Image (cartoon, rainbow, N blue to C red; front, side):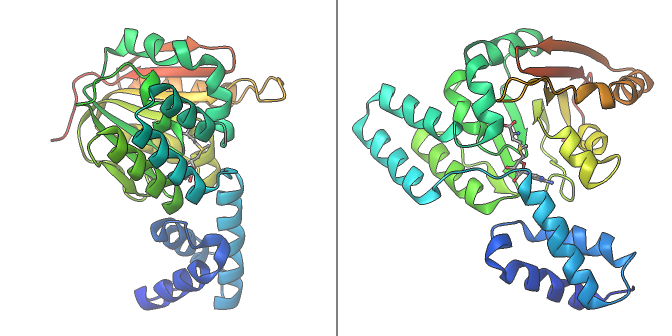
Length: 275
Ligand SMILES: C[S@@+](CC[C@H](N)C(=O)[O-])C[C@H]1O[C@@H](n2cnc3c(N)ncnc32)[C@H](O)[C@@H]1O
């Protein structure tokens, strides 16, 4: 079905009007509608499809966070100046999302092992970050770091904005769909944690597209290997061959760093590009 921009916007607004999708980035919904319009012949069915697809996109990323009380806890912790309290508040927030909750057991060694290979970044982008920016205190990077954090969930973005402000970091947090609007700022390291397979589910080839388009010297692309129930989840092997072939084709180098529940593929893209 050929739709005008106005018709597309109308459907996006209708999806966004529902309570469930109001915090989802409009670009994400627009992309879903545009793709759906290729195979749907009625507006009613297209709207139904878009809502179903947005439900699937959101269902994989649910966090159990009470955003408003977490914001208050952060403010109060920073106001107290008690560093242990601040650290605990960050841990409590990270515990509210499966991806960061799983990473908490390896957090003390996670970034030091990655940055030992990539070098400690001065510029970094955290793609589809969810609550990962709350691990800033475990990263061993300077407060002067240029740290871009992008997510397509507005509530998450607002909470990270508050945290960056309280922590004294530059306000480089944005509601952004990394597939529709890939980052343009050049960085030393791009983080794409536990997200490659989600992007591939949304659109075949999307995971690699984000790696290619991000103007980073290094890309740290991670996959979960064990879930919270301690079951092995071997997602990487589904994509390994394809990714390694593409790395070879681009004449890039890579390293693999394995933790007890997460595998990180470090891709060295060589000279940073763009600017
Ligand atoms: C599986 S979690 C990844 C969490 C985080 N990278 C980590 O490992 O701690 C997915 C997060 O990415 C966000 N997301 C999903 N698709 C996205 C997209 N296309 N652009 C930006 N953010 C996206 C979701 O809102 C959610 O917060």
